[in-house]
Length: 214
Image (cartoon, one colour):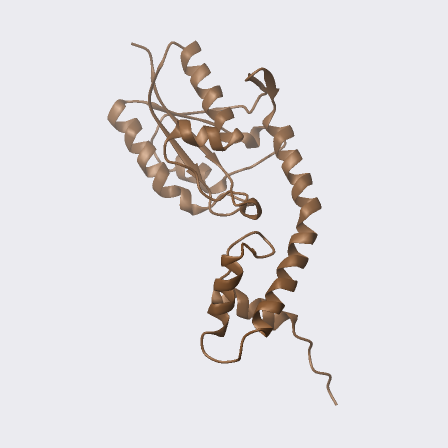
């Protein structure tokens, strides 16, 4: 029997497109996310080529759209425990090896402080489903798309927010009612998140003109 491995796959959400949650099942997650599918393929192929054994896999969707966070800790605890139980090596793709794409400072620090064998693979292009998938090109494409769509998303959020709040009488619960209305209609914040009462209050207040001084 060859070396045992535990595969770990993660990605960032795209809130403005409603991509916020992944299934816990890695196969189902790979069908929802090309980045997860890529990591799964890279790691499974590596383990096969090494004649190793993949004794566990885990998938994680980050909370923030632009960076890794400490929210990943619970899932890392789980995979580190799996590695200890099976005397396995944690294996994952480190995207930051190429042009520092998608670094995860918390994950790097966490692993440095835990005694777990680990192997980080380069994010090299691979052939999947009849075509080459290059994760760095994929990330660049999404970044350009985000930069193009972001101004329109922010403008729509501001316009819809103002209309929702002004349609309501002043009084307790006004901000929450506006947030519920916006969320029900699928109107997100300027960064693609769901509205909260506090978010509505702060954003609306910032939009109000500052009275001129006498």
